[in-house]
Length: 261
Ligand code: NAD
Ligand code: 0WE
Picture 1 (tube, rainbow, N blue to C red):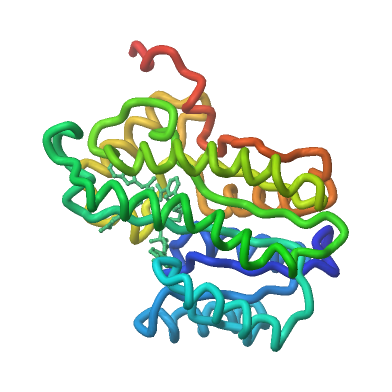
Picture 2 (picture 1 turned 135 degrees about the horizontal axis):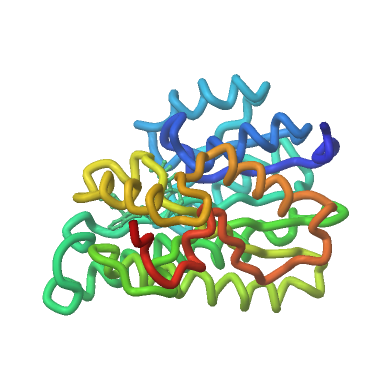
């Protein structure tokens, strides 16, 4: 299939071949899109270059969303390769590690709250502000990644849950604003997946087991499944969809009670 033929996608958020952004890149490439990638810092550069090669891409650009200058520089680099593009994938989040364990009220700091919101939510708006003038295809699409902790209380997810609630509301306001430019903006709320961002999170294995036991599909989701949904949201097949949070979570978000046996 090549329903993304003639579309160009900029992918932010690859840290390894387990990254959700890599599942998205692979799916979009397999469906015919042309890709460009950003990496957060020098440490991730060669890894992203190697993965870009697997998608026949040599466009890899540094972009640290904590720095407004870095975002602007990334656009100046991209424009050397592309006049315009169709798809922007925002697959990144960060909160200081200490904030992702223990009791929310006791442990959350002003600095942790600010960092989580800046990196995980505000960055989506800033990227849209900077890249809006280049998002000029037939049906441009912006996609971000969220998690159920945005709308439900969860152990340990803490300030990241509040930042994801902000991300989802931010996504809706950006969708409202950019609709007149025919740019669609949506989130995918993914179930838990063992990526670098999940490494070292205490009890992550228990969360995967809980989803396997209690979700309607009785299993966890893969980065390929998240990637294929992102391909749909990037494609002309979803041209009437904007401002939505789509769950790719084996149906876990709909359950009312854990399995009884
Ligand atoms: P990952 O560690 O592979 O990716 C996180 C990415 O964020 C990394 O590439 C990292 O470089 C990037 N990043 C962090 N701070 C940055 C900054 N200042 N500037 C630029 N990039 C920065 O982990 P992942 O699980 O693939 O996470 C991708 C997205 O998916 C995140 O938004 C995460 O919240 C979301 N998500 C993850 C899960 C899960 O269980 N893994 C579930 C639902 C949603
Ligand atoms: O969004 C996430 C994780 C995002 C994340 C991960 C880290 C780990 C390393 C943000 N910041 C950091 N900071 C670090 O220093 N997920 C949806 C995965 C995740 O993380 C959890 C989860 C789940 C699920 C943390 C606690 C509880 C559940």
